[in-house]
Image (cartoon, rainbow, N blue to C red; front, side, top):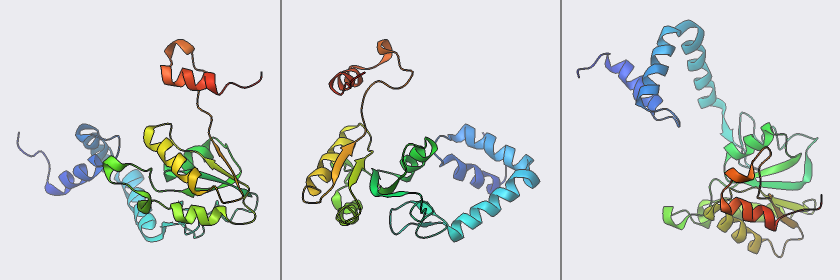
Length: 200
């Protein structure tokens, strides 16, 4: 099939298709929608992208992304400085914030250890985490890492490094999700829930 649009539009489609969750067909629909709504959508989006490009940076304290450095979370006086929640990625930090799950501060590792993908300790911000854990006001490190092999490997590695720090190291509970039905859960989730049962 021949080209149905000029190279500029094709370039827009190709760039949109690189976004997670957008395949080529979805990218075409998104591009067409943007073009049809140039005034209401495309121009404000273009402006927002330029502002993000110019102003967004990585927080030097925790690794969050924001338009100020240190970030909004790190400079919030209502946050509990005695708790550091360790996450693999900024998306995990945002998820915990949406859930209003903690009033602690964060530390973004950047990924999890994954020897198969060539991700080692030197690729993560583990050294900075260990340094923060030795701060006198920090009392607890919460490892909010994925319940995957890589996530748990990373959690064990960090726990070993924090043995000489005067902090309590905890992790998120694994088990039955809120609203979950036992019949639909996998065996690993069920066994984890049974092991980590609590008083009713």
